[in-house]
Amino acid sequence: MTHPRFAAALACTVLATGAAAQRTLPPTAPAGAPKAVGTRALESGARILQGNAPLAGFDIYLDGFHPMKDHPDMQVEAHHFCRQVNEDLAQCALFDGNTRTANLTGIEYIISERLYATLPADERQYWHPHNGEILSGLLVAPGLPEAAEHALMAKKMNSYGKTWHVWNTGANGKPGDALPLGAPMLGWSFNRDGEVFPSMVEERDIRMKVHTGSKRKARADLKPQAHPQGGVDALKGTFQQATQDIPGVVDSGAPAR
Image (cartoon, rainbow, N blue to C red; front, side):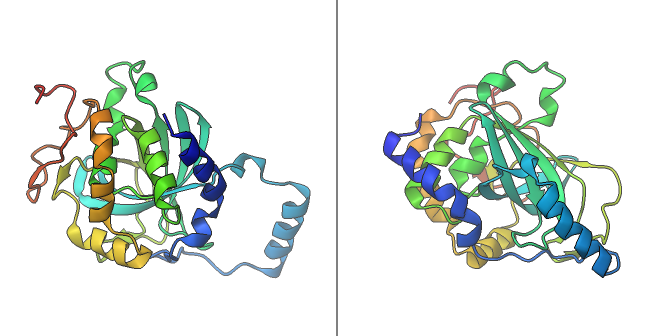
């Protein structure tokens, strides 16, 4: 449960995360001609007359990394803009940057441990665990004060995400596609040290002025809250560069330790 003083800080600052974070430009320019004058006029009219109610509340900004479950060597940074629907469910739109020109590249649904327990066994293969992302410091909430970010991460402990990436706009020095091509790809989480490309994390940390190692140390007090999770070992052995387990991150099917 979030401490009351942290809850107040979180409520007051979460709206400012986008403005406070360092700008991340999209790596790929979409195909297509520039907007015509008539298109811009239609947009202006729609903005005044139609509104965008379903987008209201997508105020929580998270930044992290996903490997594709069937192609673990394809790793991307994902900017999550999320709406907390209730205590057990959040909905996120994923982008390749945090500016007005960022490309929409996927979606993620985040559910609590309680809802995950209600899923049938064949459905759970699509939901990745979050404790590794949190305890390693890889998942951050740019722009939030440390106390508020810590409270937010505490709320997400033991949660799960179902992530579909639909557009490869480039990562790790490889070019992307000018349009969303091919089948959606299921994103997963990193659950052991050394799985994520170090250069990708280093570049993110420099650009966004965060320090993954410091985040990890600051979240050590969350380890006692960590429960064994399904999917921790789903990609075990597929990353040659993996070095060691993350303390507190245990597969629910693994022996207790």
